Image 1: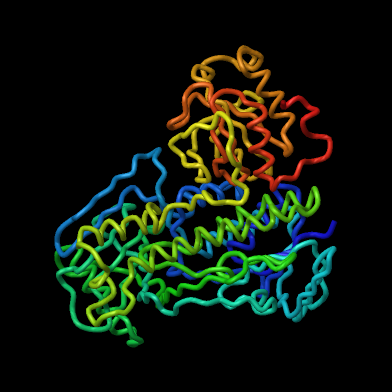
Image 2: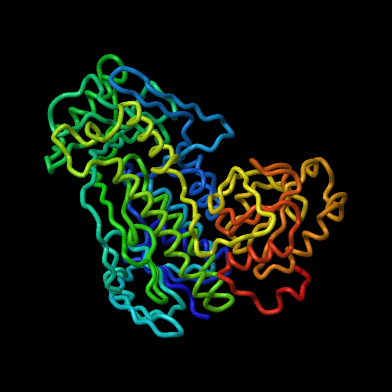
Length: 533
């Protein structure tokens, strides 16, 4: 079968290619550039625990070695610390990393993956769809025709794929603007991020009263100053003056020595494509959505797009088109991003006044701080990973379903589990293989050798039920799971979202849940004859 064509070799496109390769699906990545990304220290991303874990699985590299995992977060207003959070060494925390470093890690992993082909200097200029596949033409030094089973546009804000498919991209322009500087200096905090609102040294000029500092490796920092509405020019002289003023304010004296590495102006747009699927053509990442105000980071959502789409394309590639499963990509991901945008729009004013954006966000000052903290830390409506609660793949009316601390459709907690070979791993390590995960909660099993419990109690009956499921599944065991009673069974999607939690071993309910999760398609030779009733 023809490979999947991915247009765009940024982090989202490369992540999708590696995620498909992990599920034995070949890809061709069309890169209109020369095959590398120029270093830009001021162009960075804050990755939340789920997306950081995704990249670590695909690259085989701990991001802590290339970025900074925050040890803490503090929010200040004027001279006062209004909130302070410390992350324990084993507690999930955001990772701040330069985007060119992310791309480099993904490119290195792709170079070692025989199922991924990257075609440099290949600019897309046409797409033709047929019932059996897609043909794409590229121009440039390596211009040619490419034949694929599906095509995914991961080609950014000005997506050629989106334009060729005549998909509208409505939204709002310049929701926020930030002056950005990456510099190497010594600040009073080590590996901690800071949000400072209305600092006491605030002066006149094209800067609003808010600055964010995020640590980078080797003593570097990224500083973002919120700009007021309008198009005031940020000159180098103004930016240098603000750097010195900010550093001096944070160190209670004269500005410490610093090396300026990179500067820029970051403009946040809010846009959402009308359609994310057109036959065999899909959109992902910035080609499908733009968001990022109030501290939220757009790359997180693009990586989640890739994670969601990969297992569905892999299923269709291996077993034939499952229209309900493929349609669910748009239904799930567009709904989550739309909800994020709505939540941000509710927090932002309909019209801006002259006092700066943050000054007229509705609510109390303490509420402002909590809102911004949630956005930066990946919590709440503005930052937390979305839950597919209204997914068309969600099963209905399951007998024996019980609530746990993870809502149905939300990402599961990363608990320690025992795999089928008896090894102890993290639950997230088993994601992204294209298989469903069936997790039995069995207190005490962690202290016994696998041979003593694998054939005891409910395990034989559960193992038979897992074998009979309509989609490949892996059986795991955990000592505990937040909110789950002993002997309960959790069904988890390949991208780590909870399908359901059942009390005890219920083969019929487990089968129905698995069948709904893969779009109601039962694979040949698997079903009720295998003994799930």
